[in-house]
Amino acid sequence: MQIGVVTGLDQAAALAAAGADYCEVNVQGVFKPMEADASAWDAAAVTNAAVSSYASCCFLPGNLKSTGPDFDLPGILAYAERAFARAASVNCTTMVFGSGGSRQVPEGFSHDEARGQLLEALRALGPLAAKHGIMMVLEPLNASECNIVNSVPEGAAIVREVNHPNIRLLADFYHMMKDGQPASDLHGNMDIIEHLHLAEPADRTPLGVAGDDFRPYLAEALAAGYLGRISVECRWTDLPAQIDTCLAELRRQLAEAVPAGSR
Image (tube, rainbow, N blue to C red; front, side):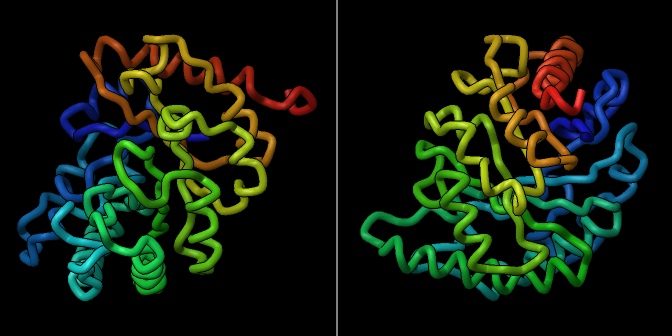
């Protein structure tokens, strides 16, 4: 399993020194999809970084709406075309669709209609992602950050309904633990989970600060044969000073979560 960190490319050297496998970059900040001009982004900054950027997150800006009365499917697809093409050109093949600001359902707007809009957007994004070799993963967010797609089962139902090989699911243990969702929510859904995130739930700290136990969640993933990537997405106080402890703790918990018969 590859271990990465959600952070800026300015921290790539620290990630490499700590033995991280990749940097998960910000779609909006790195690929600049709001800018039609290809010169708006710096491909060399990605390709010359000390670690590769196989994954990216923060897909849509908050003002490009994927639900509600301002739902903008043409705008989303034009934006996605640029985002996917630029990411693919630097071998960034996983893109995370969390984007709570974009998909937040406005007060008074039908949640059923909003869900239908998300389905419409994902069904249109699937073929476009496939065209560029991108795997788009829908991320359930905790209820304080967004009011739609708040659990792995809810996200899994949407992904199964979309039924496109380039639209899959992300499980973020931070969001799950923040809302008190059990590791058992992963059971039966690992077949469509393509990417993992985690951070300690109370203050979104790196592993090893509060000492939270992720082993039940990791065990569910490993028991299902998960061999994908896992990214630490947390609030760093001092990344270079904290990362060694964080990654060592993650590796320890991964090793202890391996099913007994597989050790």
